[in-house]
Amino acid sequence: MGAAGKLLRPFLNPIVEKELRSRMRTGRASLLISFYLLTLAGVGWFTYVIVGRQASGGAANGELSVHVGTTIFRALTGWELVLILFIAPVLTAAAIAGEKERQTLDLLLCTRVRPSSIVIGKLVASLLFALLLLVASVPVFSVVFLFGGVELSQVVGVAAVLGVTAVVIGAIGLLCSTVMRRPTGATVVAYSIAFLYLIVPLGTSIIFPTSVVSRTVQAYAEIANPAFALGSTLLDTPIRSPINAPPPPPSVSTYGGGGTNCTVTSTGSFCSGVGSTAPLVAQPVPAPIPQNDKVQAGVFKGFRAWQAFATTSALVVAIVVGMSVAILSKRPVHLPGRRRRREARRGSRRGPRPQTAAVAAEPDPEVPQPVLSERHRE
Image 1 (cartoon, rainbow, N blue to C red):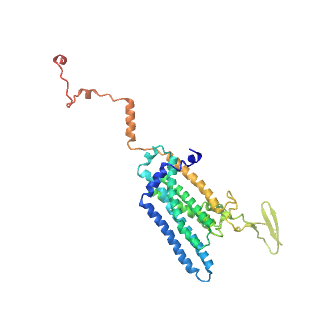
Image 2: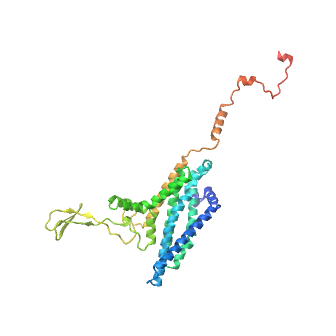
Image 3: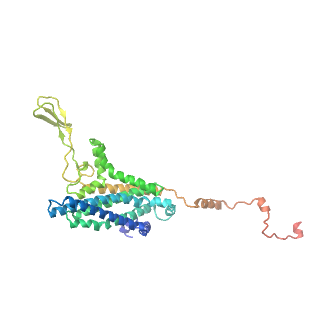
């Protein structure tokens, strides 16, 4: 087996084949794909009707077509992100917990398949189905090219961000499935984490609008948020956030009127107004927003928002999958009748139990007894 085969061995194992066959043979998969495509088509049609009515007057035909195309594309992308956040936890939350509920996980762990192959196989099978949903939505997205205003690079970028989002949410759902005993509990916890994953970065700026600490926390939280990554691929003027805001320039306030006399030192700018000798340390003001979506500071300096998101997501997936493998590897195996077999092995090592004299002296009525002669009886 070559290097490529060894690299793909964890992803091409019997678990993947078994999960794909069992998933695609049921009618639930067809219903889920149909629901996914119908909702996307419905959102696109509804957006077309609303935008067409609002922009029907005063605009040239070319400008109207571009506006309709870009608006439909953004609406479809946002709705597909919501669908991914709802569907991905369902695909993986019952992967391990379902085996526990059916009492087949212990039998699976007794096979030659490693726990890492079980976890990766479950995750890959679920993500392949999510990839099938993304591929099935391509004809719906291709309609926007009829209107114009959307480039192929934007479609590829959106598909990449949505695919990475599905991987992250699927890995988190698989971890919940490994920890929880029931699929229902694992699904609820996975949905809660997915909700926080999308809402927390947006809420930090509302809860702490003027805090310096929240600026840093929100910046790194937004790097891992798919909404801001989509903003860097969707919009001509991408979403602005603290991740691309440079350090704020100093502003000064002085006593008195007239001009100012400023001196820049290592501790800040000291300025005083005419007629005043009281220096005031400069206070920061809100930073100007740059006209690009590149990270201006920190570990991801120079990265675009979607590139920083992909890098952070890869790190999160590696950590979460490693935790799932570690938990599954340390799980004790309890097989039906295992205790009885263990006790039987211990008894065979000790030898047969000696028969008591009372039992040995008692004749069995069903077994014919030998007839002894008179001499043997005496």
